[in-house]
Image (cartoon, rainbow, N blue to C red; front, side):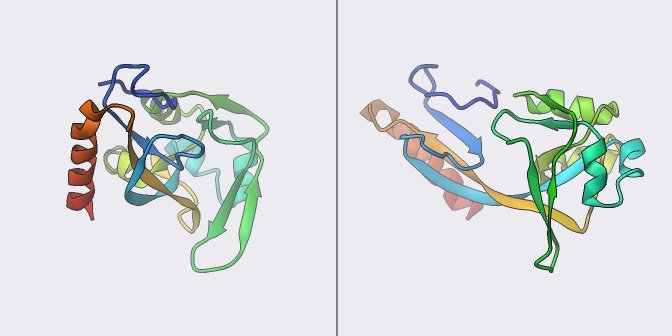
Length: 166
């Protein structure tokens, strides 16, 4: 099992399948949508108290993944209003655990899939900022390689997961 946020070919890494949070993009592997999740903006309690509007995020370091651009669009729950966030400072990391640690230590804010930070928020390690604002929902996909019939077990496993989550 490889825990890495970088896209990779399962055959190159000798793995049977990959679970990806976010659009598979131009990946040529077959992909099955397992479920959709929404992103939540998380910060340390210290930073969350300083964040009252999306513009407040611009002054605090954004801890982001390599796939994220230099700006972020947020939408207000139940309204058509949107806000563009363009932080002055960012740290880019490809590891979710490191991102969570940096946020918990008060070194910036980040966006996480809601299911991934449920326990950290409940325990007080970090808190949700801007509760009325949301990040676009993303899909969680199972990807496998169709180049070898030996990987049909991976496809069957992904189908099983999808049926249980469906």
